[in-house]
Image (cartoon, rainbow, N blue to C red; front, side):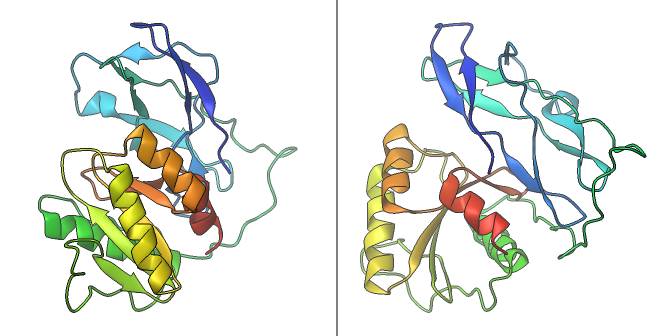
Amino acid sequence: MAKSVPVPCPTCGREHPFTPPTYPCACGAPLTLPVAPGAAPQLLGHRSWQESWVAVRCPGCGRQGQWPRPEFDCVCGAVLQLPVENPPSASAGTRPAARRATRSAFRPVAIRTERDAVTAAQRYLRWLGHAHVQRPAHRASGGGVVDLLAAGLVVRVDPTTLPTTVRDIECLWLYALTDDATGVCFSLAGYTTEARVRADGLGVPLFVMDLTGTPRALNDGAEEMVRGR
């Protein structure tokens, strides 16, 4: 499980805990971006395509891939890019034990519409090993609570440009409770602080997605889903 690292904001001076994102390597292993603890983040004034990606080598198989550079939105409004450290390549004396790939590389779908966001979450859950991930025949009477269903899972996909709220999390949890299932949430814009705290207390796994359609685990419940399949 990825451990949080302290992130000091150079604008307001506040220090925040940040959990480095985890992505699926082509070998099947979850790869957590090695955010350097204590390293000074950089203020992001202008985002370019080239600077939005970082090359990181998987410590399990040694394959180097391009991953979204980790960012953090401070409450003061500053957007920070976080430095990462490339783990050393495996050598003859330190090469890790061979790992058998358990699944193929995840193939994301670019998100351009709300429907694309639901498709991306559906594809990711199937990649994690959840069979028969389907859209419900009809929405809940409360309106838009559930977007996907699978065995033991009730899933909400929030494609809006505003962070998912604590009310959204509580509604999802209550709906899942009636079905004796686990509520899982995917969000494009992230979550409010209150929503993240409430989700941790209720055991709701949280994922955040970028526009490439690649989800990343945002709390312990989501990390357990990634590791457990």
